[in-house]
Image (cartoon, rainbow, N blue to C red; front, side, top):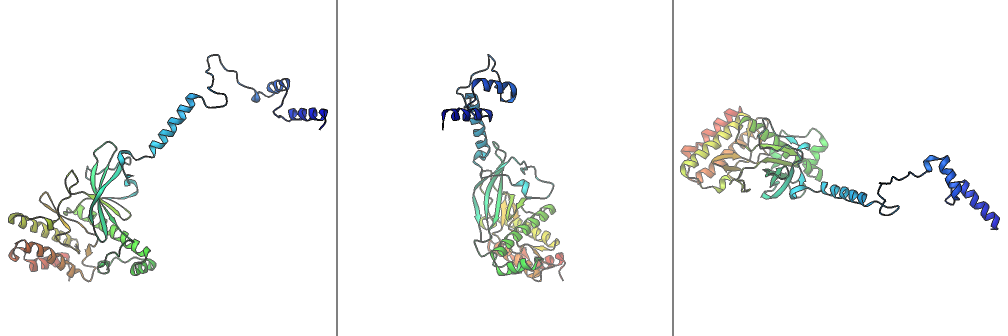
Length: 334
């Protein structure tokens, strides 16, 4: 390229707004186009620490924003999750005052209380950060890890799904069907507990249901020690008789609602502060709609009475045959 061609090329770059404007041309452009002009700096305005980079103050501000954003994503107090209250089905009203409903609360899993074929029960603490919180029992139904509910065919009479696809999946025990069964059991237990608690039955308060997880009133000590099952206690004769009468009162209340526990025994009844509390009600049976309703009632009576007989309570006290007849009449069967 010849010298005068090179000068003409630079001149054209200046006309097109290139970087090589002569000082006079750049000054003229600044006057003609105010948006290209630089703002004058006041005498007391601090100089940037380095031209073209963030000032020290801006660097500190952005660093704080990053730290805050990181902190906001961390669960406080070593919790495992935020409260699931907002997404869950809630228990009946009036709600006990110990139920934590604030959405800012966190849940902390404190370990396993009980393992079973169908579900595991964990000890959970829910509370606002910095507070002691409330202990709950988290019952979590398993769906695809085990062969679920080996006796569920009889229990599910009268609870069939409306959609044939779902019914087939449940009958064939596909993965989809097992998930349906697990959630159906969770729904059934939560509904039964809500209904019975409202009636004043000796059951734990159902706090919420979220999918296949139930959060229930924890029955035990403040240190997380769970109340013993009936099978674990060794009551004195007077206490033994009192517990039997509590058990029969619970059976009568269920029967008055047309229900049977369906799997009652000394292993799914707790004794908390001298009070008998019935637990594990996913298989609660509608004894009127279920063809085997009378047999479910009879089995509940036999199983529970057998434990009391083994502890020395006589048949003259339990009167199991008469009790069963009374329960059948109370349920309105036949």
